[in-house]
Image (cartoon, rainbow over all chains, first blue to last red):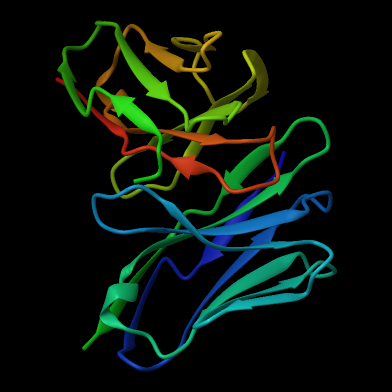
Length: 113
Length: 113
């Protein structure tokens, strides 16, 4: 089955700086890669996703890059703000008849004012 | 508010007992997913139903079972509860069988004493 590894487990950055979270996956058949943000005590919410036919996707201050050859993808947050503090989860999914979203173990991001 | 509802919000019970968690998906969504999130842990996929049928299975214990009813709501049954079953249980829904955003409910916090 799919295995998703996520690094780092914790990350602290100064407000205004950039944050990068990296994930690797094992199943080369995976073709959908979402990122979820979970604020303390809240539900996970999708912030950005990318499909395997795209190398990069950007939405305002957040971007995701995908390297299918190396089987890794990354989340980039620029100009970080205090409200970016949360736990971020990457995930990978194959959708060839037995879709299953496998999550990474999460990164706790803290923005230092 | 994602449109996914879960009841109850909190549940406190004793070891050896059985509980039922309920989830109502967003209007029109056919897929329901169940996840377990232990303290400071990632999201562990348990099981997925699509339009009433089991679609994908994760690391769901034999003591746990689920079903999706004709009105598309789903129930997760946990029996012979152990202390280690204490966790936040999330339900998520999506319109398709996979490959797209999952909308998470607020979760049910289960405490086994």
